Image 1: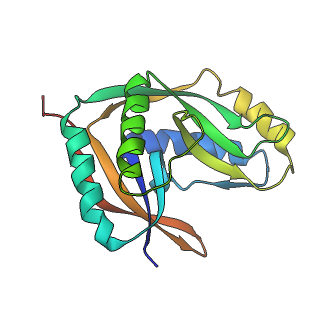
Image 2: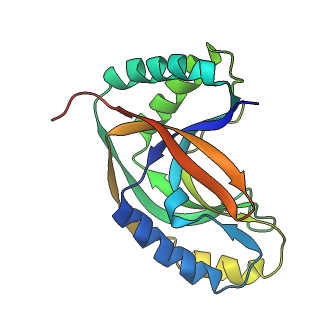
Image 3: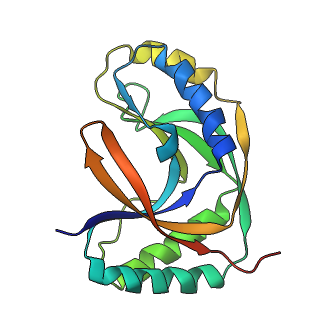
Length: 189
């Protein structure tokens, strides 16, 4: 069995703190949600799943090639909502805006990883930050009311300077994420 890997954009600590203040407020709704811990907040570009250690070098080489061909860019985190809808929420998210570059990057990563044998994701990529996974419909009405108060909230702007290859270990207390490599994007300004 290999490593459970994914490719992500990490968030600055200050933004994670701002988001966690929001999560604490949402927890007060008493909904049955498994909230993402502050240290695990990130924007997933590609979930690789079970990955052999032998493939890590090739994955890194491809990510380095993609990262060098780009300029650094920014995106905005604001607003909140749920997938797939408010009647049957499964994922609680924060919105990602000014995301054209993220969408291009994710597409290129998807294509590059398919070349290494990873399954393509058929769903259209919608950049977002997952902050919770809904386990049951208990108190979701209260959760939706709290979420509505975050529709216009601006959490901050982020400069994307790295792509990160991560591994995730599932533990009884929840997933723990570990950085395997951090690939700088473009050239330093």
